[in-house]
Image 1 (cartoon, rainbow, N blue to C red):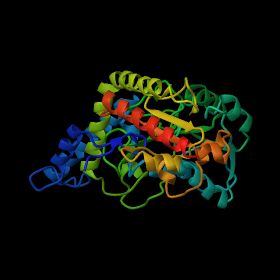
Image 2 (cartoon, rainbow, N blue to C red):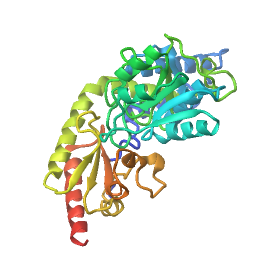
Image 3 (cartoon, rainbow, N blue to C red):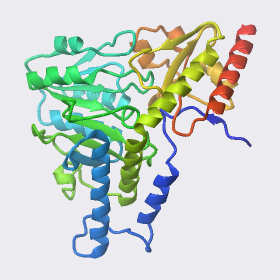
Image 4 (tube, rainbow, N blue to C red):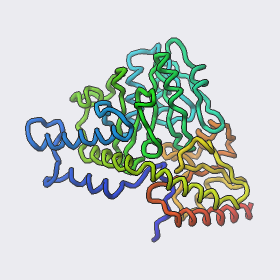
Length: 382
């Protein structure tokens, strides 16, 4: 059976073959399989060297000091560690976030509310973006943290991080940014951006699932409380035996992304233009999110007169989604789309198409033809 054309890169990316080959060198008896924390023999030393090399590779993509990279099991854990790690030990703190964040941030902040922490929930503009002015208006004397994503995982819109970070630095408020959908898709430079904590994911950048990292700024020094306790790994911020092969995979993927970033942005911009141009003959198609401030690989569209569930059923030869994979178990309309002002009916008509490294122009053309055919058929039987 022929596989569907994959257009759900925002949910996950396939591991790049070069990354998989590198990971295979750190698993078996004939390879570097030791525990990186074993300091008494060569097996451990070799594993530790591989881990530290990967730390440099991840730091390189975001222009960080390798000592600022803390390994986690993914961006979800990184989000939890950042937010809970800042707020830990106080119930008088105030946190600012938005209603269209990833569930890892939303649910963590809701949990904090249950612990007595005060949370302000910002509503984005119609294009999905939060402004520095909105953040400034929400700040209080006891605000300790603002948490906002750099690229929205459903809309692909980009938040202007720099002015928000500058504002917060002047006010002495820590700034956490979920950059899971940003790394490898657009330039991320923590040296130029006043960001204190930044979450990263391997599987969004052609690396393995189950691996991520949290950037923790050293100057000015940011202190967070550990949420997982044990052997005091990762300078006491995150205990647990380090999975060498996973870490090597993330490092390799980020190093590859750094060399390909500009080229891939251009390629995806071309594919996006081809996709939207192909659909221009179809009436009643509207773009959700910003047309200007966005990454090229994510396109969220609503189709008038057609609900997304029926459209997805008709598009069996395409792998697409009606929202974030983190909330795909629910039939409720996307909370992100409702958050930017769409009513339930409009939100139920939206699909997210996301392209990536292995998407071809032929696949884009095939997707366009399939969408036009299925939408036309569904509209004709209304």
